[in-house]
Image (cartoon, rainbow, N blue to C red):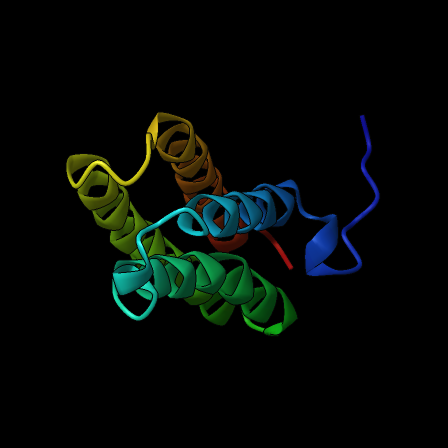
Length: 122
């Protein structure tokens, strides 16, 4: 089956899932204690936003290595989010099972996308 090439990062399923994750993180952190506004809430939101932002930036790059490097940077932000979600759960601020499952799926997709980029013939 032939798929039309993505014309923007927003056409990528991995970007769409990462964006949904960001929206869910914002919703979850909205219920954090007020003293976390500039702490954990801010850190988690920043790291979450970095995931689709780096996917977008990588999409615009011309070379395969540059494109894949931005997927790797997104992976770093995924790792950061993983820790913040563990901390969120352990502090009793929110249940994070759903967010962690989303993050795992996004991580698998970013790795697969980076692999596909590096093995492409363009």
